[in-house]
Length: 384
Image (cartoon, rainbow, N blue to C red):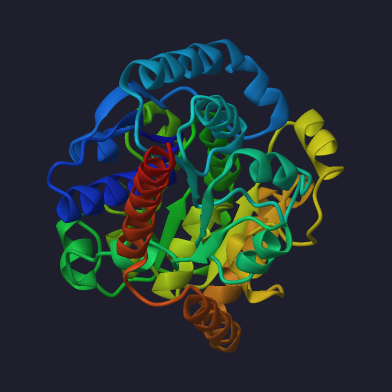
């Protein structure tokens, strides 16, 4: 059983399910996820759409639906008794499911572990109670779990294998009706509805300011699947040539000279492509005030956190304004030295993500948990 609750988790979960089935053709996967997990052959108990939000107060609104999904997953586990449960990120939901399945005697493997090093570190005590093994994707995370006595393995970042460019930059842009050599700004405004409702108005107000300073500027927007087109409409309302592309984020990033992205996994994806970026993030004022009390880091963007220093600008909460966004984006377009320094730092980030094959190593670890369970059961029967 696999559980993930957002677009990036669904990407990783789908790749994991494919690798599991490639290694063991008799492997059957059930769970909670999205299109990627389903396409990998999983039998979905439910979909994450509508449950993925940012912010503490925003999460309260989806609690009834989250609880209903929790009950369905646990009921399915009672009926099917999976050999292993794999939680993929999405900790507020997956912690509860993992604890329930642990009580049923199901081994729990946590893949893409929660960011305990960034906020709410006390959650590690709960993980120590119900997690059989943690598969971390950042090298610095391993020591955190080793110190807590939790079995852990660094598998590397799955995006290194999943990043795929399908068309050269010039063909991709001309296919969208854009100029092959014109300065190109990529926008990655987020994958959740409440993110788009916050980021799009600010970005749409920033675009004319950027266009006034960058001649021939054109814009390509990466649209996450299943998001309403109306949320992106303000980005097309200006005078800049603009194309909105769904499901081809790697092509969008490959074609970009500068990127403006919502904080999250997209910053790692942008780092892999080595594109100078401006990171933006905003939640409701109450969510920010409540959450800030639990945050232990000074930077928010994953690229900066992995680097251990600020290599690309972050515009968080009140700093996320249209004029600040425009100023930072224009700086990268107009100052080649600033863009080069950012690219050098992003190359360091990519190097820290490990080598290729992360999903395969994760699949081997999951199958290993199943085999270990079988060996323990056989030993107990022998002793009996």
